[in-house]
Amino acid sequence: MLEYAAYALVLFSLGMYVVLDGYDLGVGMLSLAARPERRREYSEIVATAWDANESWIILVGVVLWAGLPGVYAVVLPGVYLPLIVMLVSIILRGLGLEMQSAAGGYRRGWALLFGWASLVATVCQGLVLGAVLTGPQQHDGTFSGGAFDWFSLYGVLCALGAVALYLLAGAAWLQDKTEGWSRSRTLRTGRSLLVATAVMVLVLGLTLDGADPQSLHLGDPVRAVLVGLAVAVAVVAGAFAWYGFGRRPDWRPFAAVTTMTAAGLLGLVALTAPVVVPPGLTVHQAASPHSSLVFLVLGVGLCMPFVLAYNFYAWRSFRGKFTDPVETPIPPLPSRVQPLVAPPAPTGALRTIVRRVLLVVLGILATGLSQDVFGGVSDLIGPLGVTVLCCAALVAWIAGDRRDGRAGHFDADAGAETRS
Image 1 (cartoon, helix red, strand yellow):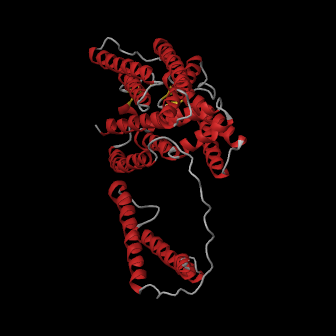
Image 2 (tube, one colour):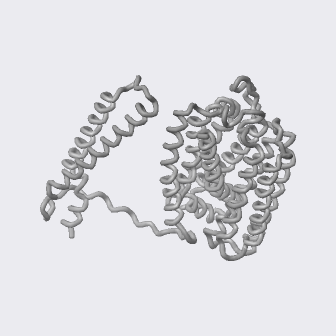
Image 3 (tube, helix red, strand yellow):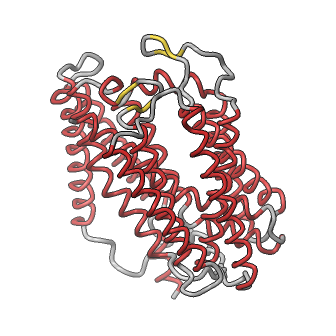
């Protein structure tokens, strides 16, 4: 049963990544066709939450590696090249975003890097999806194919479908976050991308049976009902998106596209489960031992609320239409001067030391829990070694603070009070 919980965590994290990072990849691709004065605005819109959005793909990798290692053993060697290119593109995309934001104005090179890296990352994700759906060659649970087996006609179609879907999500997000697009242009662009996405979904759905080496078992009534419900929800959401483009409220197209994407992913799962890698690698066959699954489900399950809270906080903090803020320069750190007020009481330093001791003790307990309770062994480093390392880190921490205090790095407030 725990293997299906791990599988559910993979699906949830993957769905969150496609929905959240999909729109900012789409915004990046749309920036390539935008006017130069709009490209900085697009990058600033994405910069508010792109790192939180991409954290979901890290969770996908962690859960697959620890909970479903059989999937790693078969899929990862077969998609090394597009996966590495995707990771490099994501890194370059983040570089372009941050450098453009720090430049203080439009920089053509960084803006183009952001846009083209978004396109390359999207294409690579589509190629990886196509390689998984067409079934990597495998023998006894390991990959047995060639280095370029990921490249196929169905993989290219998946790449085109991913580009169309992400562009649609990006257009819906821009309607919600910007005022620069005219209603007529938003209507025309959004509906055109919606038609392109629908066409690609139909093509991919009709050719899946021939491309996927497993039997899809469409005669199963439960499976047929679930797939039918997913298709119906996607169609209704697509109709809402069609009506919402170019009309208020501006959030409606993005909500509809998100619902459509989630319904499509759930329909694909209902069509293929419990097989995770065609033609026959199931969730049960790919799962880790029971002790690893317990650690994984508890660890990731406890982290999930924090990731969701971070995403919600970012969305709430930057809700509403985008406005380019007027940035004021940060004043230089004042030199150390003698404050006119009395120095802080020793209780402040005592509280700091107590707080950090408690943090170190918590780290020791967490390390011991992961090693001894879940692992049952401590061959590499025992509890005594962990304690010595943590105490040494605590000493270095406090010594560094004392050194910074003597250097005057904590006297900025006191200097400001003196000048006033």
